Image (tube, rainbow, N blue to C red; front, side, top):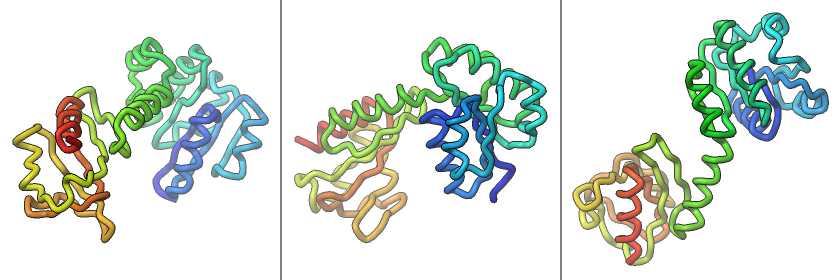
Length: 220
């Protein structure tokens, strides 16, 4: 196992998939939920899974949640339980607290409680799918911040044989190509002489506007 692991409170769809992936990555994961059925379902996949009332400070203390590097509040639509659990984790001294929010208002409350990171799984997934549906060459889209995005775009036929120097994305659009995924492997920080082939995948960083302009230009 790596590190002191994660405690995930709330084993719904988000909490369950997060827990499974963290275990695959080699981390110790304690899953907590008040629903016995959810806990039984996840027991084979997590290091430990227990039925417990997460808003009870004594129960949380007895489970040793303060010994984990990171606590994730993945409670579904019970905003009160989410907020109370977040307060418990902060009071118990968990080093890093991440919480799922189901609305902007919920997220703002969590931020005021000092959460290290607020995640919006449904909103973020909706944004990514919308961009993928609207842009046929867009494979993936991740908002790094309110200002910057990283996107993966497939190289259209019209750019086959062109070099990065020919494209000159930084000067023309303000965005940067930080990697190219080719059939022979990934090229990190490619130089200007790198030649593109149809179906290569460009990894681009920039603002939404810069990436949109770049995509429109290359698909003309």
